Image (tube, rainbow, N blue to C red; front, side, top):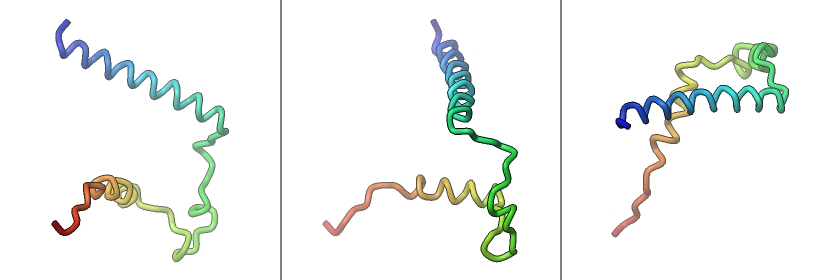
Length: 74
């Protein structure tokens, strides 16, 4: 079996598992994607403001990118 075929099968199985397990978790926890967040319901322009998705993604990935080893003085 070629490596490309194994890779394709793995990606398809991962996608199926993601969808099935994600929908099961949503049912278990009662997740409603149409429910508005407090940032939308209590919007005041200062404290409660919905986040821009691009900024939010940057904030989520910055701790991961900066999680390298910390070296002290040698």
